[in-house]
Length: 50
Image (cartoon, rainbow, N blue to C red):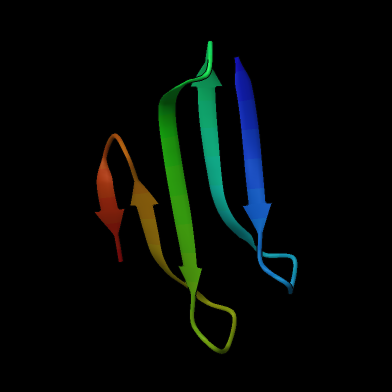
């Protein structure tokens, strides 16, 4: 099982993905406003939170 993370140029977490045998199990994404507040969490299993 492998977990990878992605970050924006300000070092904020923008995504993660979990793979097993190179097949995606789970992924999530994070969106921030200009002030740095988390405004959206996208989840491949549970949908989006705003």
